[in-house]
Image (tube, rainbow, N blue to C red):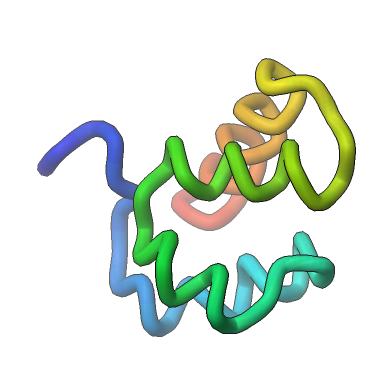
Length: 67
């Protein structure tokens, strides 16, 4: 598996991403398509957080999703 992609089926995970980061649009999620870097970038943009904070949020979320 490519380490820059979020594990699992993106179509299924999209709903979970939307629950966590409701400001992200469906169009943005379609563009992201499971790419961790792009997800962190959009979180940074939409929520006005630092890049390292956005990446931390993605890692924490991923840990919860994959136990």
